[in-house]
Amino acid sequence: MKTSLAIPVEATTSSRLPKTDFSNLVFGKTISDHMFVADYKNGEWTDLRIEPYAPLVLSPANATLHYGQSIFEGLKAYKNDKGEVLVFRADANWSRMNESAERMCMPAIPEDIFMEGMIQLLELDKGWVPDAKGSSLYIRPFMFATDDYIGVKPSDTYKFIIFTCPVGNYYSKPVSVKVETQFTRATEGGTGAAKTAGNYAASLYPAQKAQKSGYDQLLWTDGKSHSKIEESGTMNVMFKINGTLITAPINSGTILKGITRNSVLQLAKDWGQPVEERFLTVSELETALKDGTLEEAFGTGTAATIAHIERINVNGTDYILPTKSSDAFSNKVLAELDGIKYGTIADPHDWIIKI
Ligand SMILES: *Cc1c(COP(=O)(O)O)cnc(C)c1O
Image (cartoon, rainbow, N blue to C red; front, top):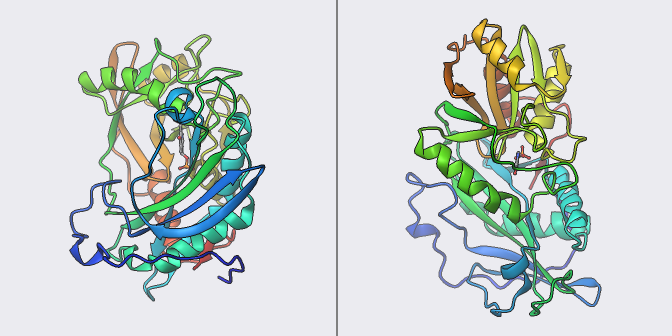
């Protein structure tokens, strides 16, 4: 892809690539050689640069550390069998990041800074995109306040950084989830639709409680009545009941607008699969689990693409889901998305950019 921003590059003199064991990648632990950085001051983004990945120096009065003005994105790059690097739906991540920025009183990132910063970083670090089947390069753009001031107000200065992590074959095993009816992830008027740090901090305690009783993740319910299924901690969720795919709508302000969610719904539409974007109630879910009309349940998100759910706890009772047939919708949609991402099948919706 052609780029036009002149971004100065300070290349590392001691690449960590030769010492990296690509057969033992733990998600998020191995970080590539370089990062893209831009600073916001005096009302504009300046000092665009690519430099060696390194710790930052922060003042103890840094506003983010106290009040959490911080947002992030997550997307992936894949290697096709010609060794070319493909990025999935980066434009959607860029626009979602700006929606998060607006909610958190942070400045928007111009499209060229986001896209070209990412593309030029990937060009430099393309050796970090793993080629083993099923592996990829996770891309983490994020922005945070940098004013050294402990008054509660929007910061005047910010830093935008992109770094990347090679991640291994993410054949996730099916997950167990618990319907959460005490704690709340998001509520109308809150920040649930923004990919902002505090949402994740607030979810740790209830998630840890559930993990201690043997569940991988929570299925959050609405904050007001705890009677409607919303989503999971880092994934949207979908249920196939009596042939219809059901997932929460994104207009309540409480649901993160997942790009995987949107992609799955697009493919469902292409295939004529009936879809309802509406809240599934906890009691409907319970009934469908009891009478066997629940055919499939899965999470959708960039990390796993599709995470099959095998066990759901509703109101204290565990339900085991039926084992999926090989023609299950979730398997078909996972295969299709993988095909598009790795460039082995056509990309009818222009979701891929080639670096
Ligand atoms: C990031 C995220 C998702 C999934 O979004 P994708 O764009 O599909 O990766 C879903 N829910 C929450 C809360 C998230 O943070």
